[in-house]
Image 1 (cartoon, rainbow, N blue to C red):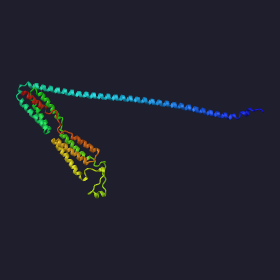
Image 2: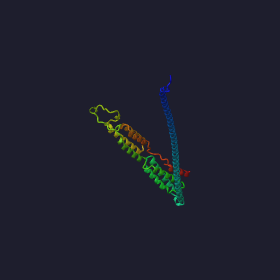
Image 3: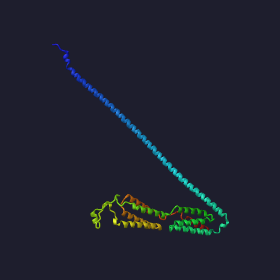
Length: 331
């Protein structure tokens, strides 16, 4: 029997084609895997470069913020140094003005000492100065009469101009300081306090009547029917003072404000503070809690802390120097 070579090769051809197809698919998968791996590495590099750029930008931003903060601190330090220098300049200017004033008083005293006809009435003038200084001090301390105290001190300064004693120089300078302290009070604490109380009284009319700041709804028919016996209100709108009694309560509050003004006018600090405490009590009863009410009550607390007769450290120093000078001469 003779073998045909063509007959044996025919079945092997499909198998090779199938194997070749799997090799092509495997090659494509390998290429796809290599491409994906390279793409993933490229994406990771991009992310790393992006994070590095963000870190550098953040570091640069922090550096800029630190520089800005350093500049701000330097600016604040410079401002503080400028303020200190300005305060030092003011102190030096005041000292120079005081030295100039003292030199002028010294020249005036020397010129008066050269005149021998001015020594006879000095004792009488010193007595008059002492009387005027005592009156001026008592007018402010006892009666709170600021204008009367200023007039008394002005008369004392006029009389002191005719005294030729060497010790009058210190008296004049001390008297000028006392007059400057009195002038610094302006119209006086009573006048300023009366204006603030008047303004405070006018602001009370602007306080809201309801807790929520909205007008109350009209009562129902059964509420109007039972109003002589029972009053029904919402819990947010209940006030310690009934509506029918608000007029009398507001009149009582105005009376307390008038008592506070009268106490301030006569210098009664205890009565003034008690009247304002009663005003605070009426306010809490007349109006519900609100930001406006808290602001008014804070202003009322500030008004209670105001001194009706502020202490003046310089007051009485000239009188004390005058008495010490005269006691030294007597001894």
